[in-house]
Length: 89
Image 1 (cartoon, rainbow, N blue to C red):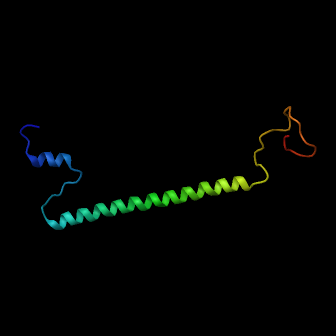
Image 2 (cartoon, rainbow, N blue to C red):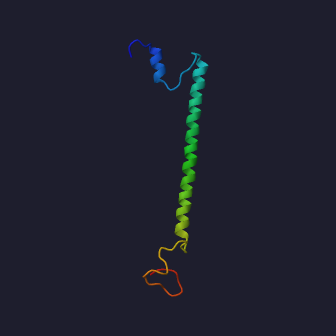
Image 3 (cartoon, rainbow, N blue to C red):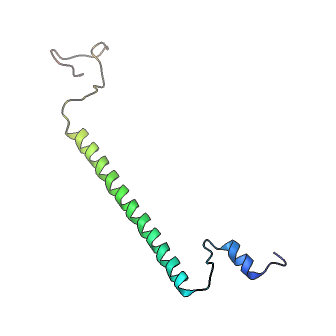
C-alpha cells in the first residue's frame, strides 16, 4: 500500500481502534476484552454441562427402561410371537 501512513495501515489491521492515547482508555479496553472472554468461557462451560447431563440422563433412562415404548417388531409380521406377549423371538 504505497502512499498510506502507518496509522491508516494499523487501523485497517486492528480489531479495536482507540480514539485517544489516554492510558485509562487502554486499560478499560483490556478489561472489557477480558470480561467478554470470561463471559464466553462461562457460557460454553454451562452449555457443555447441561448437554452432557441431558445426554447421560437420556442414555441411562433408555438403558434402564424394561418395556420398550416403541417395539422393533409388530404382531402382524412373519416372525414367531410368544403367546400373550408383544415381544418378538
